[in-house]
Length: 381
Image: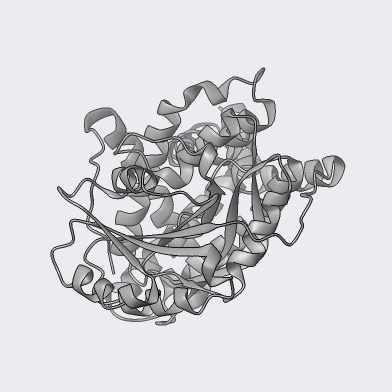
């Protein structure tokens, strides 16, 4: 029983800490840098929108202020059958060259973008969300990576802004800083196996239309890797989003994202072949698959360590691990209770966020086997 507990502890430790260390070491050894040159290809900035009347004007104005040659930049808003004033507001900017493409039938973001790609002639396409704020030089910083012929996609550097100074927001910011460091290490290792959906640019010639219920910011990079191209992280291409502020918001978003990732991985499953894609398959299993199934591993760890402590009481290490779990779950419960009562304790933010994300992963894995993933969803604002 102690051996099982140690094994499950190792798996969790590797998933959330060990793999990061391995990725950094691999990056230092392989040093696969990107050959960057200041180039100015034609770019289409494609903004996905569904009922974004609150934010769409601010987003368009932010896009019009980007420091990139106007004759090389096309701004296109893809409205997925918006039923509010989104389309009307976008049309106000037509005189500034902003294009509106309305997709009828509420087909979902992925299918809306599939259809929009048929209208694009630019060399580079950049996907964005209506709530994402771009720094002025983001496109310049992104496209210079395409001077390297082996680069097929570039993902930007997302920074979260915690306007409400919430527990959930603090945890999200901390976790995403860790993710950004990991993306940098993965780039030096060879390639990423995912992208930031609100700031990802790719060669139009490398795009693969995806099923409507697959999340493109995870699956499209996999399709690009299968074409023999790299997906890289551009640390200087900065954009900003607001964090979620409540557990319910983070929960619903994470369940959707993880279900989409699992569905996308099943669609692109051949990339798990370690002979054809050794680095990509290693990254996917270490960074994604183990993380998605981490809550199941944690449950197994809790059961085996509890049985070891209750029945045998022979291993001090297992007793320490069990005690740590109990304290961690109590902290997460305490943080959740405080949040519901409007009390913010930032020192508990990581435990709270970590628990919510893993509970969402458990729900997503369960749903994968019993309910098909829908193509559309209501975004939480």
